[in-house]
Image (cartoon, one colour):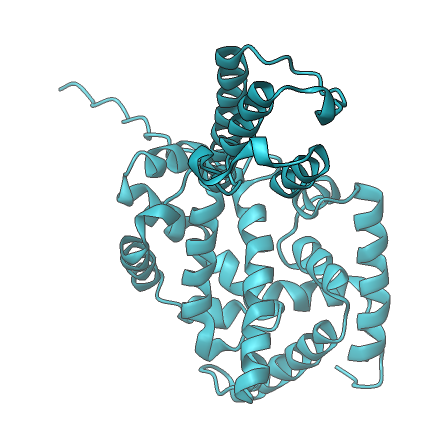
Length: 144
Length: 185
């Protein structure tokens, strides 16, 4: 073959068909097969062949399931607490100066039970001694 | 004396049957799949630029990756075609590793081989130039060319394996041929 002559399509395909043929002939197929099986046996179980959805999804499914449980639990707890106390869900602005000492005590104890809020023990606070504005500041700090 | 009836050849199981058997834990089915496709895969890997010294390892790696992902194989193309496309990824990763490790491997065509020395030299020279030309092609053109010219696949099959259209595969093939002719002349 002349090196400066372009290959025609047929010759190119012919050369391509022979490309790697000798190397492939030298490949020990039985040894390769044994190697594949041995390597597969050494694979961790979680990498075993499974449908893609089953093989990949569990991590996401577990996260999604955990989120559903957390959110659902929180909602259920809120509903249960709201129902137990007989508190109305809608929030309305209340002028604390209109509340009696007993009502303020009840309100404060309900706020004190809010998860994450610092507990306020009734014996530590003499609500009768506080003014309406002091009570408002106290409630706002608790809500924050 | 009664002549014995010719024994009907037992049809060999299809690839799909072997895959199903293997998924059921039949390692012999995996062995049969390797026997069936390893040489075609090896030729493709060499065409894609795999050094012969690593060929055995790369063949095994390709099968392992295929077996890991076989759950995602939906029969959109033949198992062998799908296997070859995985082989293309394996070669690409091997090249990345080789760059990091600064390993320079001789192309298969430049290695010593048995047979008529003159014939071998000429064949090796042409193959070497073709391999070098393939190495300069974009990956998609290279794989389409190899699947078409080396493996003899139809454009529809190539397109299904590579996630493109038969028309696009045809265009990639013709671009590859044109550029290879320039490289190899």
